[in-house]
Length: 608
Ligand code: GCB
Image 1 (tube, helix red, strand yellow):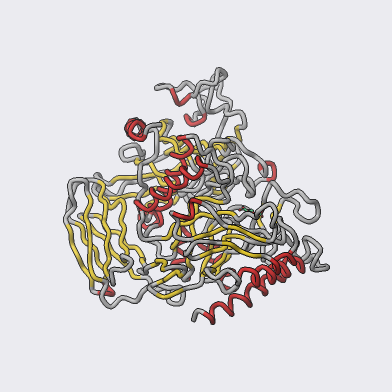
Image 2 (cartoon, rainbow, N blue to C red):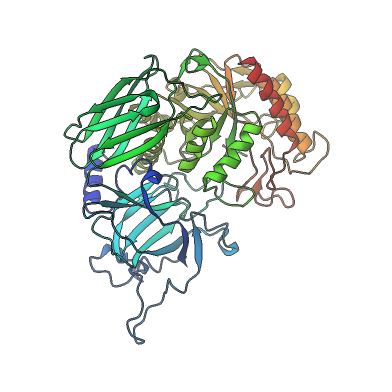
């Protein structure tokens, strides 16, 4: 669709209350007035009976709906026919996926209706309220007291609706239709190597602000500009002065907001300690404007490349990483809490990591906040995975929107140094146009971070030992990152010894994936697939092979923990799990864990 037309349509849709608020309030948890987490009543509705009538007309498309589960009704008399009842239906935990909470829902891919009742007393007569969702996979239709608030598409980013003037003091009914059906034109498309966890998988909160509030802000060091911080605070409401304070540094600056409510800031960060994995120093930053006040913990650091080096605060760094899915193998299902984030990132630190790849979609907001505190650098990505519909403008708009929502949510996190556009996408002219457009969009949103994508290698048909990395996309990314599976999908680990690499880019090379399946506790010959010995040998040989790439500046082997995948069928070995984890589903480290740990200890010493 033409860009302007799309903007106009989105504008109209938003006036009609059909889409979520353009930019959710920054730091939602810092404004929470009421947690809407906990038990929600649910109705499992595979035929969308509560959404469309028997002529497939949507109930919520009518101004006066005569049906639809979002009305959350009860029969007024025994004679009235109503064929659903939230009060006596089952319940599920929020945040949480439905698949891991009920065996019957393990493979379920359709609609579940969620309902939560709550009472609420506003702080003051002119206060504003917003209902904020950390994420819902994949699409969500949201209703308050029987009326539609709007809809959100995309399984991993936040959205919210303003509900000022729409709340009752008692008995508010919040109903959400969540549908996780896979669709070819969606992002991701129908085929992925991870579980399609559905549901209200992230925190749900009622937020409250004064009439004019701080909607968004960005404060960051400019690479190459010494200790200069540049940024803005975006107000929602009337234009009024804005103050930024960092008490520990005795910084206090004020700026006027322009007619759009934007106040620009630029100041010197005198005497500050920069954020790094060794010293993850965060400063309390207070933003205030009129009656609104918000405090955030922010780290300041720079990230840039120079030739094949990555410079963190001007100093060369090697990214000792590991890939991670947003899944807690011990409990099963999506990782949802700060404690989950601490456990996963804690295991990564035990491995010697200073860096983690958050694969293959935006992880919950806790992950980057905990990484900020723990001192772990992050690669964050969107689910532009494998064979997206490159020619479909709706697919592009969807991908761009998910990226925008991710970048806007997390661009004050010092831990995030890389935005990644895509994973293992097949090279074609349409794909490259699509991804270059995403790169340009992301650079405009955030010119201070590195841009990458997990690309691929290939071998000339007559020379299987040679690996070439050649992709037009690499001309516009800051890093040359690629996945490679020599020894697992391509040949055997012994082939690593003869491998040759042709990578004609003077940019840092980051290996975004390599690995092998191993069932924890299954032992045997190093040439026997699925044994821990095979995996450990593959790690040893791969690390020696990668050391021959002169531009090598980091890696994120695949993957920290075993994770569920509906593509993995081998009985007694996989049983629905991808076994490439260095840690098994019970938390036990496999042999390869120590191999990588030892390599990272050496690398840390080399770059100390
Ligand atoms: C890949 C994908 C990742 C898969 C992995 C595998 O290249 O990027 O999502 O899980 O390989 O195990 O095959």
